[in-house]
Image 1 (tube, rainbow, N blue to C red):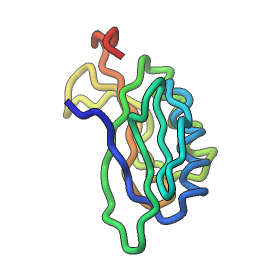
Image 2: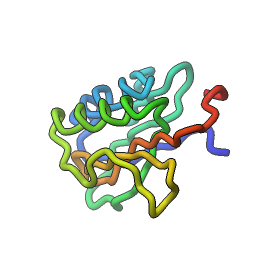
Image 3: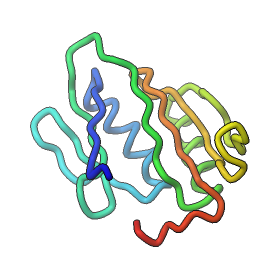
Length: 125
């Protein structure tokens, strides 16, 4: 449904370093910089960050992971990169019995999630 998404950030360089680390376990990498925007993905720009003047709205974005171990790696990388925990890795029965996720607050306070749904068909990625 969504081709790509751009998240507002205050410090482009700081956020680029953060997202380069936390998206790697999920199979995404830095692809391009276009003025005040930086794009990540596996082959095309799927997620971006855009320098935005303060104040910025706090948003929630969830990235699909290929396994529980990828969720765990995302969470560990995020904490190592300075994120604050907003929910350690685990099953979220309130969403779905197969919903395994972790949540962190990025350098701008955005709620960033990695989620793996056991049994999900990920062949389309």
